[in-house]
Length: 309
Image (cartoon, rainbow, N blue to C red; front, side, top):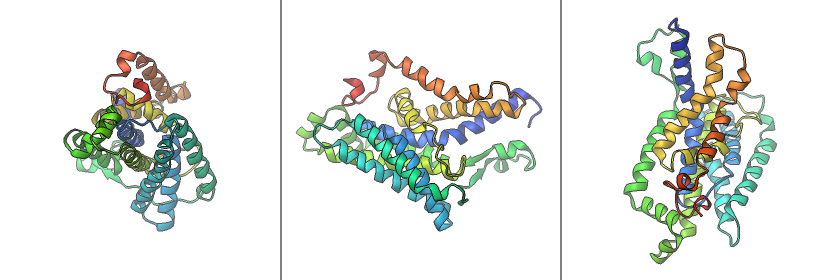
């Protein structure tokens, strides 16, 4: 690239942060919206895997990548809707229900997705940032600067969610339900309807992350596609203090951590490769330990969440 190994690694990590962080971004935004309404969706892993499978199948059968993206979002919304409805039943714990939904989503994806392991589907295009910046098309830097076309959508969505939650009537309802269900009921707001709607919308957003996995990076469907990213997103939302824009920076941080191993390998550092691949999981554990203090975990948390009780 530039001739300097350090610069090469930095560029590779930056490009990888966007590439690897895009699914984290969508899943964390979906979970942020869900938790803002006072509900935790631990079924996001199932949502992510099922939507990745459905999106890949939709793109493969239609021959259009954007159809696959829409199918992935709709599939994520469907699984999340089931979670929202089940969690609204009397004496049902949303954490236990989320674990059941995770098993349901992954089980359905593995069963229905077996015929999709070998075929190739149309891929989400990469935005040629290198061309726009005048980088030589023949250089490795040019290909490294290709950006997932869904990433700008995620950035806009993070900004829109942050603004909407703060400045709109529906945002006020979501935050009110998440902070005090009794106050929301006293004002005539249906707590169940708001939570089911927020969970379903969050599932749609997370489903876009599934489409990014199967239709961009790594760009195929297999049963080990997610590697726990749906569960990592729950810790990521806590790290971002339940703020959509901070979810963007947290997703890039996790994406950069995930890209560190391949970046070092690209400049000849091949020793301890698998150890570097474990960095995102170590980072997740560090964040959970750092936020275990009640004083820290309550900062910005919707008061109806179990974490704040």
